[in-house]
Image 1: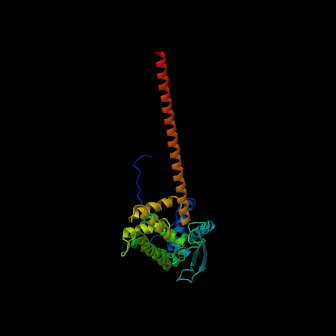
Image 2 (image 1 turned 180 degrees about the vertical axis):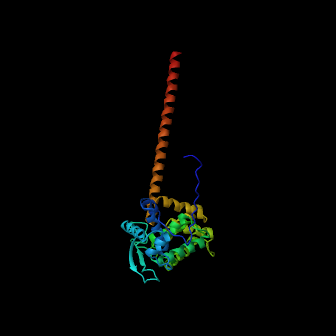
Image 3 (image 1 turned 90 degrees about the horizontal axis):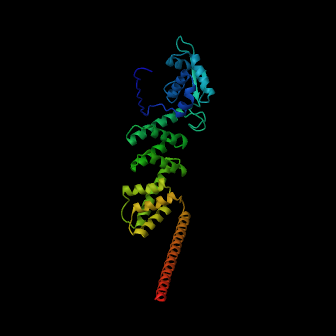
Length: 339
């Protein structure tokens, strides 16, 4: 094709007033659908969570400048695809116009397998308003517009982990106040709470309060008295709890081993012990004992191998020296006989 191609630059700003569309819809459903059907779907998605707008088939037709039959064909198409369901009813006539056909959409999702909003049901208008508020609150705490990855993480917390809006807001508040704005870290905490079956903000506060107890247990193991843990120290302790998933008992055991090994407090040294346990799949005190036993066996095998190697070397030396003196005696005897 001759001539310069026009370069198109797209910028995506995910904000609280945005309409969220799953990638699966774009990847799987949009390429196969009529363009007019896609426009109807997007318009429905746009207004589904807006209680101030009452959608009718005629209103959709007016907005998209198409016929009501076109709108009905689009609705039937998406219904066959399993992405939405709808009902129609008659509204009261307005002026000279006839009765408008009111539209009630339900079960709308861009995922045909029903993953979004749980069991294939569309989130209610209340839930959509809550989700928008969660996005807004998250942006306020992080101090920036959310990236695509961050937005998808919030969707994951809301739809897949089933976290309430209050719990997500406390999750963000908790992580940010403790110096962590990374969505990777926030997701680690969310998964940790999910594993502990934390379902409310109150339960999360109780769990997070346990960190304070763990912190003083660590300081006590180090022999540190009369002060609270520093921010950097809290960072280590939270990582040992959230990311590594260790119990207070195992963390204290690692601290005790640190003191025995280097005779002074060291979060870095304890970190090295716990990181090794993570790599080895340690999760319980019994796992630690098994790892210790394996280490002793390996040390014993190494010592035995060294002893065997040393014995072999001595035997070779003795044999060599013996042969050397035998040769010298033989040489002396022959010289005497010759003389």
